Image (cartoon, rainbow, N blue to C red; front, side, top):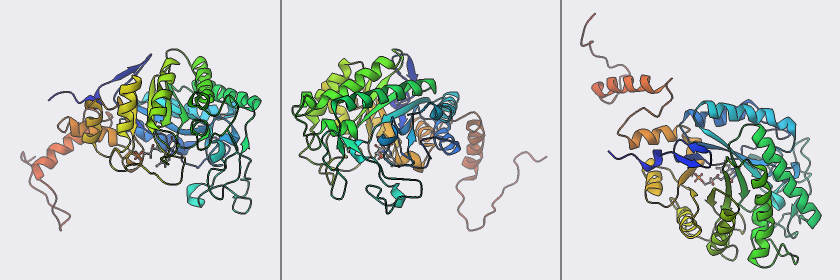
Amino acid sequence: MTEPALLQPLTLRGITLPNRLVVAPMCQYCVTDGMVGDYHLVHLGRFALGGFGLVLVEATGVSADGRISPGDVGLWDDAQVPGLARVAAFLREHGSVPGIQLAHAGGKASTLRPWDGHGPVTAADARPGDEPWTTVSPSGVPMGEGWPAPHPLTVAELADVREAFVAAARRALTAGFQVAEVHAAHGYLLNQFLSPLTNTREDGYGGSLENRMRFPLEVVDAVRAAWPADLPLVVRVSAVDASRDGTTLEDTVAFARELKARGVDAIDVSGGGIGTGWEHPIGYGYQVPYAAAIREQAGIPTMAVGLVVDAHQAEAIVAGGQADLVAVAREAQDDPNFAVHAARELTGGSYDAYPVQAGPRLAGRDRLLQRLGPWTGPDPVRTEQPSTPA
Ligand SMILES: Cc1cc2nc3c(=O)[nH]c(=O)nc-3n(C[C@H](O)[C@H](O)[C@H](O)COP(=O)(O)O)c2cc1C
């Protein structure tokens, strides 16, 4: 049997990911003041035990006003480092590379936790202690009907945001993370600069694609300079806006070329976040073609994401050269062991990829189960005499 492409290591700068499966960043909206605790250790730790090569911590606010919701993780304060350091140490100890997504939500900040409702927090529906805050964006365009108009960032304030990304990257390094991902997707602040739908500035940061890319590239330059030369930097992009009138794949290929020239090591290719509904094809692996186009046309490694649900599907993406990495979000929530299950499925049933605490015992049970055949019920007990009686 040929070695599955999905299980091959990938070296980016000084870091070798043990395989190509990644846990995509997933907001959990359940911390206070940005400080992670036991929940995140367990939530993320199980993905290391589940065999993922890279585990990306959710969108982590580089400033308090950059959080999507009051329950977001943050790295705007040194006090937030120890909780994340525990997570990073656990991931490393158990074979995953720890990564973290650095984010500013811009005009899409100050929103309700999803289970409290949708859209911006208002004084009327804020939980006690969760005051809504003034959001910021390139041009003050509201993010949708019923959303407040954000404050348009001045050039001096842009420098503050850029420095907040740098300071958060430094804290991420102190916490022990080995991959940093800058969030420039899903309609959040950097995506708001890139999209003509949300960036109507008339200064050097708006108008042409070159101008719309300027601030995101300044952020990436500054983070790259602060992030060690032997550690990889990834940028998550929305290859296309949800609306067909916004950012195009061609725009994003041009952005990816600029990112590559600035020392970005891989593009995490997502989509959407600006516009009312997704106006592009939807289905299994629906964003993979974008990852493939960016990989080919910008000549940079890509991570594909979006409705990848099956080991063979993930293997086909990497083996077919459409992306170098495959990230899963909802599938990992459903099956935190997705990566070891995939390894087993692609290697004829071997438990080798499992943690030592589990693999050999499961292999032993498997031999017994194979002899017994499937349990068919209805009687819960079906035994046979030992082949070598005591
Ligand atoms: C619960 C949840 C939280 C998410 N939070 C983030 C996030 O923090 N940052 C981000 O870039 N994408 C976030 N996403 C999007 C996922 O990373 C991923 O791109 C998307 O769910 C598609 O992948 P999937 O089909 O494997 O779920 C989130 C998705 C889910 C389901």
